[in-house]
Length: 373
Ligand SMILES: Cc1cc2nc3c(=O)[nH]c(=O)nc-3n(C[C@H](O)[C@H](O)[C@H](O)COP(=O)(O)OP(=O)(O)OC[C@H]3O[C@@H](n4cnc5c(N)ncnc54)[C@H](O)[C@@H]3O)c2cc1C
Image (cartoon, rainbow, N blue to C red; front, side, top):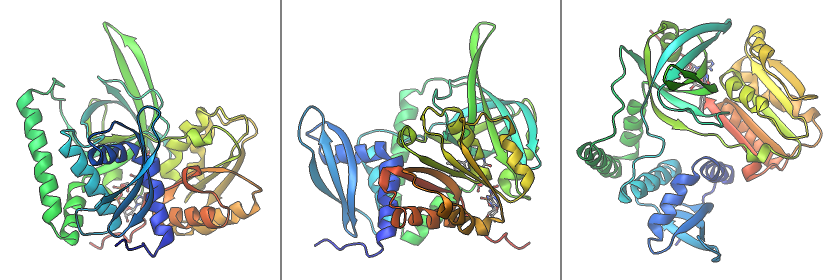
């Protein structure tokens, strides 16, 4: 018995999100499901209340086949898929994807616009070569000196794996509500910020890796206070990292949309633009001065730029007004407030017929009423 998901847009959002951003986790789920075959690639084709339908392509020239992978826990769809991925990774003795710790030394802080603070950081390990949209999960704390990045002794690795197994065991037993609370408390002091630029220079005997992180500050939120407290010489720490993919933007007419939190990703995408067709670009900000962020960004020749100044809760309606005036476009990259992103993503899918891998429209933050007191 397979029970269809009633909310078609919600189901498609999840399928697109997993296929676009979690292909490695999906590959691990497929490998765990087919231990006797080497899997080349996997993509979710459907989701039911009881499990996911995955199209698996084996390595070599073998035909792709469909597999139904049942869920192991109760909860909402995202939780069930997340759990399948974690359980498959732990079963295969791996560690959770992107859950790598890194330490950076702050070498400069600069005020770019009234609310943009740029951190320049130095790293002992290289940054990714292709960095547009690459994001780090920063721990909101500052430490005085970085621990030595020694290789992990076998017993620490074993302990980590035991910890992972315990985490999976615990997740399986908690009620959905308590699981959500646990994940919220684990992520309470972590904030995602994008690597705006990365480069390296030879210094003395070693190559030194530099990166820039641009933080949009707003009032006295934890991330804003943390970035404001940083000084040259401070050590900051990241707990996770994830890449963003843009092969869909390489050809055809593209539409790019970003609010302040996604200006760093958009600026890097524009600086790496190789598509001969210039993109349509929409930049959103609450204050006009924040648009100056782009004053030193090289835009592709003939890019059509639309600047929108509006409060965050008007993002969707203002973006949709501009989209209504645009003629045909085939691919989208967009990042903004979560509810606005959802409305725009659904409009692009259902009205402009931009589907699946051509429609990367993401929520980068959620508008919530500030806590009283
Ligand atoms: C992949 C990815 C990459 C990102 N890259 C960047 C980046 O390079 N630079 C950057 O500045 N942000 C970036 N963000 C967004 C950033 O992680 C969020 O804005 C985060 O919520 C900031 O944490 P905070 O402590 O300031 O606010 P929170 O503690 O999350 O929220 C506190 C209050 O502030 C409000 N709030 C949160 N963000 C905003 C905002 N942008 N504008 C107005 N109110 C807000 C909330 O609604 C809430 O009321 C990225 C997010 C993702 C998912």
